[in-house]
Image (cartoon, rainbow, N blue to C red; front, side, top):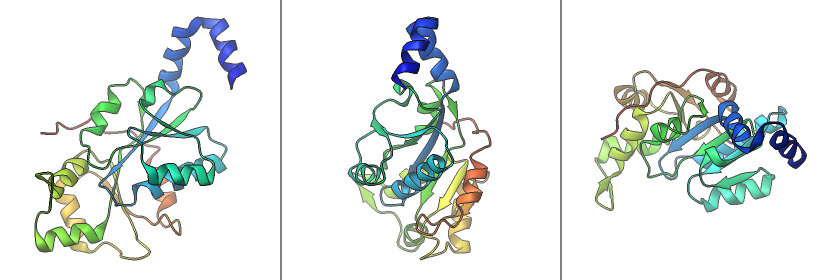
Amino acid sequence: RKRRFRQRLQAGGAFSFIAKEIDTMRLIPIAGFCGAGKSLATLRLALQMQQNGESVCICLDRENPITRALVEEYKIEAFTGKPEEIQGYENVICECYGLDTGNKAKLMATGCQIAPMTVVVDPARLHMMAAYGAMTLNSRAYNDIIAAQLKEADIVLLSHADLDPASDAVKAMITAVAPNAKQIAFSAKNGQGYDEWAEALKGEAAPAPEIA
C-alpha cells in the first residue's frame, strides 16, 4: 500500500491523490443506540467483506472499547477520527457513536460516496419503551435519540433475531418513524439476515433529513 501511495503521489501530486481517494472511497454508515448490537453488526459486515476480497476498514468517530477489542481479536483494520482522512481503502464502515444523531448529514458533507444508512435497533428495548414510556439519560429521552436515528435510516437492522424476534407492534413503531426504511431481522451470531442486508447496501442513500 505504501508503494502504491508513493506512485500515485509521483503521478499526480498529493492533492489530486487525496481528491481521487475521496471520490472513489465508499462510506458505509452504521448507527444505533448504545447496546443495540451495532459493534457486532459492524464486525460481521467487515469480516464478510474481507473474506470476499474487498478492501475494507472500520472507522470509529469516537473510541469504542467493545469494537476495538473485537477488531483486534479478528484482525480488522480500524481507525478513530474522520473517515475522509483515511487512505488506501475502497470501503470504510463508519460506526457512529451511540448517542449521536445527524450522522448521515455529517457523512454526506465529506464528499465521499455514501451507502444506504443502517440503523441497528434492539426490538426488546423498543418494546420496553412502548410499555413503560420514555427513559432519560442526561435529561435527554432515550426514545427521542432513537427516533432521530431512525429518521435517518435507509435500512433498519432488528438485532438479536436469534433470541427475540421483533413483534408486529415493534415493526409498526419503526414504520411510523421511518416509513421508507427497509426492516431486516438480523443476527450477528448466526448470520440471519446478512445476505439481505448486504444486498440492500448496494443501493443508494436517501437524502439526509433535518434533525431537530
